[in-house]
Structure formats: C-alpha cells, structure tokens
Figure 1 (cartoon, helix red, strand yellow):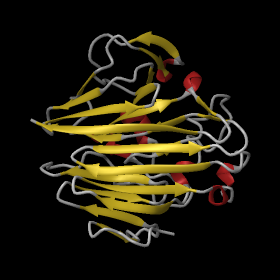
Figure 2 (cartoon, rainbow, N blue to C red; figure 1 turned 180 degrees about the vertical axis):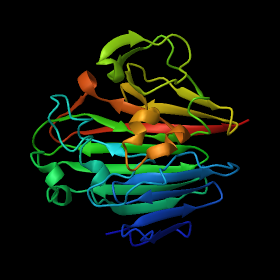
Figure 3 (cartoon, one colour; figure 1 turned 45 degrees about the vertical axis):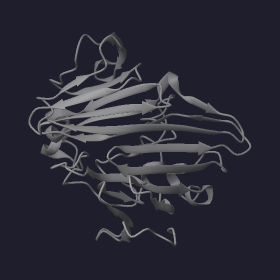
Figure 4 (cartoon, rainbow, N blue to C red; figure 1 turned 30 degrees about the horizontal axis):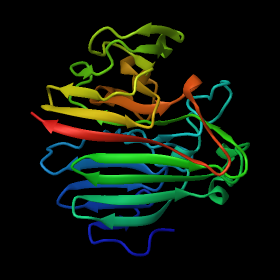
Length: 295
C-alpha cells in the first residue's frame, strides 16, 4: 500500500527488483527509498557530484536479505541482541515490507512518511517472539540536508529496544578519510573482544573497524578524494557506531566483496547497555541529520 496522493516530485515504481521503490527528484535534492526495509539508498543534494550514501554493486534484493548499503534500519535489536541469541542479526525492520503513507514537498525538502504495522511484521518469521501491537514509523526528508528518523509506539506492554541508523557514507577510499568529533570518547571495540578504550584524536581507519562510541556529538568525515566533508549528527541517540570490515572480512561477504574501500558506516545508535525502554502507549524516536560541505 502506498500513499494515494503524491507531489509531482515523487514517483513510485518497482525498481526492476520486484520491490517498490520511491523516487524523489526536486530542485533541492534527488533520492531513493525502497519500501523493502524502508531503506534509503540514494541522496544527492543539489550541486553534489556524487551520491552521499553507498550501496554495494553486489547487494541482493531478496525478501529475507537486507540491502547492503544505504541507511538500513537496525531494530528492534542490534547484532544478536543484548543476550547474544537474537536472529536475524540487527532485527526484522530492515527486511520488512513497509508502506508509504504520506509524501509532501514544501519547496525546501521532500518528506516521505513510512509505516510498519504489527499485522505486517507479525507474519515474518524473523519477528517471532516480538510483542504484538507495536507500530514503527520512519520519516525521511530529502533537501540540502538529509533528515531521517525512526520511531516506535508501544501498545499495552513496555518494550526494550536497541536500534541504529546504519548509514553507509560513500567515500573515495576509506583508508584516506578522517573522522573528527569522537576524540576523547570511550568506545567498545568489537574487533578486540569488546575491550573498552578511548579515542585519541581523529579516527583514521587502518583495518577492520567495529566500534560503539559513547558519543552523540556530530561526526565529520573529511574525504580528500571526493573533495567534501560530510557531517552526521545523531538526534535522540546515545551512541555512535563506526564500521568497515576491510578486505579479509569483506572477501567473505557475498554482497560486498572488493567494494569495501568505498564507504564508512557512521551510525546513530542506542544499543548494548544504552538500549531504550518504551512505556506502554509511549513513542520514542531516534534520528540522524546529514549535511555535506563541498570543498
């Protein structure tokens, strides 16, 4: 089901992959969201020579597979969950069939409203055991900046939720970029067995990286090859996750392979011991704002 009335800057098609795709083309920005997972796979603000988000050329488009790249919605658990037993990894939102329920263009941004109802996700094997009745909504605004938010409204019982906006930032070469904004923050190093340590100065990736930072302030990715700076700001989040598998691990990922140098994930998150509890009837949100400065 999709919204019945769309502004002229919004169109809907099947994308040639058997899933519904929502296309935005306005003077402010162009963008794409697949209803499979409510996944943003493209955002190019006016004047930008390159897309801001990365999607793997090997990404699969299958009902049980998440799109490799873009901005997957990881929830209502992160990885295998806090107890280490949850499957599939990163929850069921990023593979669920969402609905487009609204679209509007105010002249500065095109905003899409998406919804995942309980009767839809209850039919998914991946959602087995998740409390029925919760409603998930997502909003994406394509303009000079990209604003994305994910919300959950609890029904009659409280919910414990881990979630992350798993943003793949397109870069020229991940080994050449610098990330500022994390200096002094503590982080859980998942590559080093969960060791907790502190960031000293800017972050420059030199090998497999999977870190959960106890930091919510803006992170700026300086990319000398594509000549731009991308700033990602968490909204109502508790942490920032930085991830890239690098070559050896990526070689074993059929939907990524040798494309790993072309992105760095900078995620707004509330995971592990920073999960959120949603009281019955309440709504909780997490969001991210992305801005681009061309050099």
